[in-house]
Amino acid sequence: MSRKPLISGNWKMNLNHFEALKLVQELSYAITREDIDEVDVSVHPPFTDLRTVQTVLESDKIPFQLGAQHCHNETSGAFTGEISPVMLQKLGVEYVIVGHSERREVFGETDELVNKKIKSVFNAEMTPILCVGETLAERDAGDAESRVAAQLEACLASITPEDVGSMVVAYEPIWAIGTGKTASAEDAQSMCAFVRSTVSSLFGAEAADAVRVQYGGSVKPVNAHELMSQPDIDGALVGGASLAADSFARIVQYRNQA
Image 1 (spheres, rainbow, N blue to C red):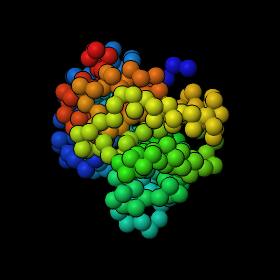
Image 2 (image 1 turned 60 degrees about the horizontal axis):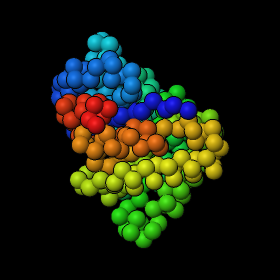
Image 3 (image 1 turned 120 degrees about the vertical axis):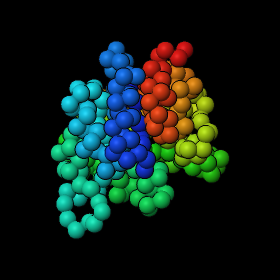
């Protein structure tokens, strides 16, 4: 099966709504319709920027998909400061990042909670981007694969094979996020292939063939082509490099970087 790559820009806690508007407009000039024919692009602003970005995407007919960085697992209730998946869906959000390592490490999100969020995102008719990955200590101890397998099994519990095949899994080596370190293309391919094989063992070959597996971990224009050339890497979850139009556009245009 041919899987169209998905390049996602995770802006994290950066850019006010004026800066977000400027970045999206700059990206709309830098990324061409021909690029979008080859690669799907999603942008994931902070909550306060979502309405602004939605408006400019729709009014200017910019062919990017709107994404969110996080949501609560309940649809409504007394959860001060939280955002419901239904609220995101009403803003035209199509992708929601779930279980990012920063949510796990800083805010204590567990695999069980991530599983609930995935189900809620699907119930709101959006697509989850599930993040999995190991720490440097786990990798050095030889536990990278067992850690990722355990995350996949727990986070995808009771999800149907059809839904698993429709979602995105982002492999993000935690030791490479924001550190400037990057897994080698061979290491990234090996772990993304492992993600796919684990999905196959849990949900079947059809789901494994359909699921898109992104790599996330200090993705930059200089390494995007080599990473994206790997057979089991179907896109990238980009952090810091997504905050500048030039660098993010060059990652989207990785085909030209050979």
